[in-house]
Length: 391
Ligand code: SOE
Image (tube, rainbow, N blue to C red):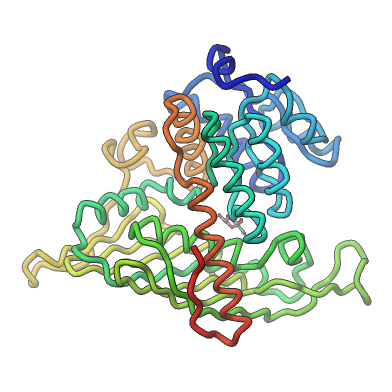
């Protein structure tokens, strides 16, 4: 029998299960392991790490601080001692796990993008709304919202320091597929990944565009390209050891937002020399902001209300105790990194569970991003025709 949220509240600590132990599973595990050392969060226990390979997941569980490991997520998510399910598995598994966990009364954190298809994202969002009515929380892991510099950018925009925002440029560039001999992975198959650079990294940029401006993307003109159509197969499944790549290597779009804002979006996994560069520029009537993930402790700010002879972009080192999240970390100037964004994410999720407040980004916000991804695909399939986003 599943415990009611009231009983869970009466118990001493929240039991956490994480599903997936690869790159994202490791990043999330690291956050669960460290969060209580820095932030005041409700008591929880890293109960169980779930994966398909029993030996490998047991090894990962021991290394990442989980009390035990398991291979069957269906059994784990109905356990009475599990209150929180953190889904770090590939996108094709998100909908089944998230819906089952929410129905079992577990709070759910799920990696981005919300799902591989719009239909799945809609089902997940409906399940989250139902669960919310029973006091069960859900959140999607757009972790870059928890970069202190981007959280500060959000505050400055909301305070009106840029005046009226007119346009945004967002580019997320990587190069791990620039080599045509880089082998196939689940990330390059439509049935497991949904899409390529679009869902994996443009989704972050789309979320940032909407989050920072506080507006919603309503129009899209998009293009997708796959530059390397076949890659060496890792399991000898394909002919001649080659397998078809069924997702995009790169994506582009021009976007129209509510509030009369325009934006450009670029995402690539073949941008030779760019390792993990998320660059965002925001231009308003009274100022501008610039950000690059490769220098994530910094925010560029131009105050256009200053006398013209004194104007210029200044570099804010976002490392003061009164900057978002930073009071918990090191003395000023002792910078933080990419992994801290996941710690902030876990902190915010646990705090929302404790306070009963709505965590953000919600599944609804994840669905909005999914609707934009879908519109980019539709526009690209129709030779870059202007496509209205169906929100
Ligand atoms: C892909 O390479 C990836 O790992 C994404 O899946 C993450 O969301 C992004 O943060 C870094 O790049």
